[in-house]
Amino acid sequence: MSAYFTILPSAQELGRFSLSLLNSTIFAPHRRTVFNHPSLAEFDIDGESGFFPRDPLPPLPRPFDIWEAALDETTERVSLGEDESDAALEKRTNSEAWRRAIKSWPVIETEVLHTNPRLLQKAHQVLAWLVHFYVHSIPPSNEDASITVPKSIAVPLVAVSRVLGIAPVLTFADTVLWNCEPVDKSCPISLENIRPKYTFSDTDDERSFYIASARAEIRGIEILRIIDAFHSLPNMSDFTSISRVSRDLARLTKAIEDISEIIQSVRADCDPHVFYWEIRPWFEGSDAKGPQEPGWVYEGVDMSEKLDLSGPSAGQSTVIHALDIFLGIDHKLQYRRSPAPSPENKRADRGFMARMRRYMPGKHREFLEYLAAAPRQLRDQAQETTALKEPYDAAVMALKKLRDMHMRIACLYIVTMSRSAPSDRPGCPVLAAMERQRGRAPEKGPIRGTGGTELSLLLKAARDATRRAALKGN
Image (cartoon, rainbow, N blue to C red):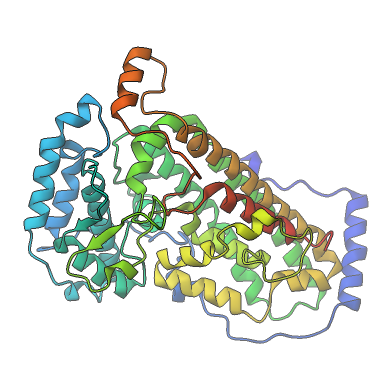
């Protein structure tokens, strides 16, 4: 509970703030901004559950329940194709039979689902998980060829994706937003009342990974309320409005700090080796090996090579995108800010964040577009209003620290583990050497995210772009 208490300012600090606020109301531009501010509900955002559906997604009706039944079988029947452990090898025959069954299915038309957004989301989730189970259960071959996703799941996945406005592949929404449900179904989803429905590895490590991501999103609900309150203000020229925004920026800073702690907590329950070798391979999308490597072909879909088929990523969290837009973070390096971008910043994938929005539900992407185009922008207001500069910079630096921490987590879970081998855990060194010979080789060259982007460059560029948003020094 104590983590959510606000420490009251000293009399001296309160005096400085009052003087700053008085100057702001006297000398700030006195203008009243009147515009139509849509409700969060118009963007499929719930006031209580945020980007999560208020209730768990419903089961699919007949004949679509065949998809859900196949997904329910995966824990017992399907193993990671590149896994050479005895337990995985024992499942190889069952995995192959499971894939043959999927190939034999008819293509089911999805029009009857198109009027029910929650059934569409459920269909997308189930089909996307099936695609990744199908692709990644295929044992590696020496042939440098693309992988064909059968039309029985490719065609309906593309169909429902077009209605939802989301990429036809596994996304953050499928693994977190639509995958987490309350443990106690009589109570709403909360930081403590949450669990994932589906996993690839059936490990507690994977469950903990999803729960940490979901808790960060739940804590982000307050961020959405703060953003909504800012855009709902009738003006920014009076004492009351400026005071409220200042208080909300302090709340925003605390929420960002809490999200940092939540993400950091994943280290306690998700082993880096298990994550890298048993969980992360399932997430990889068509371009995970890089743009020059063969990808996936969606059978029965015209020009499937043009589809967005990267895997799920934390970069698809709409809460973080909304926070970036609200604070005016310039990931594309469009504005002159200090310090100047480094050569590495310029070399990073500056289109990554914009591209990740195509992996969000269409309504959530519309919310981001609305925020970016809104006539009132927080950074501009903070530049013009003395009382807001310090609390604004505090929020920016909290986000910068979050990204610093994210880089450390990525280094531990991905960069360090990429130099390891599947059996580089405490145990028999002879067995480890044998499995290293027959298992997945440690990565060489630049370390890539599940979507094929050079990870280190990307994370450093995002951190540096955040730092440059601070008003102090600009």
